Image (tube, rainbow, N blue to C red):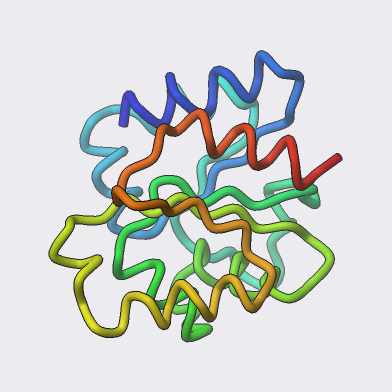
Length: 155
């Protein structure tokens, strides 16, 4: 959780970007248990989302220029590739894939997950949808590459 704050949120804010955070329900539970939700809200000035809003509630985040999913688990990558928006985080990003809003995904998966026979197909599907996928020979690339990719796709 400190990684996300120090390696993504703080540098993005320092670059002058507005940062809105939406977590999967599991990630929200982990961040909340670690006491990280409120500090992130204070840092960004926006609520940290972990659940969908009611239709009568206002949107808590501004319209985005780019989505960054970092780190992306093997489960999240598979769901994104299949278009399964079963939570707020997945819904917003799956809706952006193939749109004019850039999507950057930085998978952080185990070597075993990357060897699964479906893995390469998921990556190919995301690339075909225009996703800027940061995945190399090793399964973990530096998080700084995610911020560089956001800068590149939003120019």
